[in-house]
Image (cartoon, rainbow, N blue to C red; front, side, top):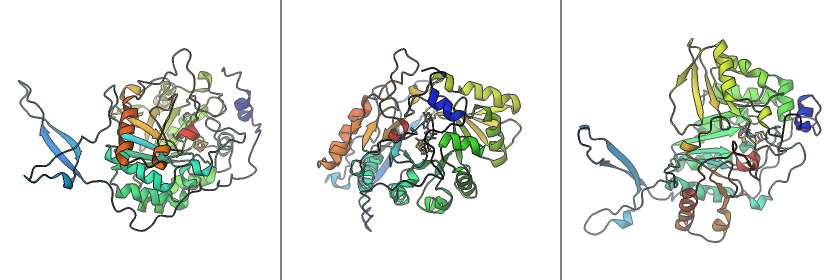
Length: 417
Ligand code: SAM
Ligand code: SF4
């Protein structure tokens, strides 16, 4: 689809809003089937872990012996009478290309109180029935299984995670599972009052979406009047140990690409990590086109021209190329370029949708159901085996830049970003 053939998205950019919510979009009802947590329910979190250090095989001429670590599941029942320990399989997930999968994005709801133009439709959309969405107990069970499989990072997302009652309780459960890195992505509308609760539940890091610093443009993009509440949410985060917030902006030409420098100035003034995400073909209305996407290279060039940037080293599996300001100003810039500079070769992520499907790639053609297993009496071992098998088949990469690319049938709000 070309820029000119995206009339709906352009109409919104021009100020015509086909299905505009009259006021701040009310919070949609939280998903059903939210069985309240019972005290003590969290007791048996799988088995404790032990860290075993093994010397790597000696390499001739390279004197220092590097030690490799691997986590194993330790089962006290497996201690045989002679006192030897029996270790099970290493707790890691790998695909057939040798990539280790350590990051899980968990979508806890497909509901959202915003309708960002690059994500949701202005037209009414079908949400999943509430009983199709995983209950918190089911989500907790899967989190435990994934943690046992070596998942190190869990990001809670949606839809909008803060619209589902009980998200703080779920975070607490993840904390008790000792997931090393627990983060959340939110649109920020409900954030300000929730920050203390999120912190005490154990949240480590937070990403807040903010697509414009101009309230009028913000309204056009998100189709809400929530600018002030999102800003209050960011202020609340910045006043706590969760600072610096990561601020996500998806740039869409005709909407907000003129704000690159303003966002960079915002990072410098507020000391936040400003991340620019390339618009991906995951919008509900299928208006994505290359013309609407602002390449990361353009963002870099424009900011660097005004405030020279210095690259910060990053882990290969990280999605963002990170920069600091050469003049020492606070704040950081992150560029996420899944379209123009795909990072599939080092991808360490998989996703769990709110209705219990595993997606091994944002652009997967198929997803893999776990909900049926959960509800049909599968054991943890069965589910682990299934997860290992489907992770093994993770796609080599997305095909956005190949002829004949077909966007996935599920859009971002259903997959979980
Ligand atoms: N509702 C929350 C939010 O907006 O932050 C969390 C879910 S949202 C799907 C997660 C992230 O995906 C957001 O940062 C959003 O900007 C991003 N996103 C949504 N649709 C996108 C698209 N078509 N291309 C690139 N990023 C997108
Ligand atoms: Fe909702 Fe987030 Fe999608 Fe915007 S990007 S419509 S806030 S899920």
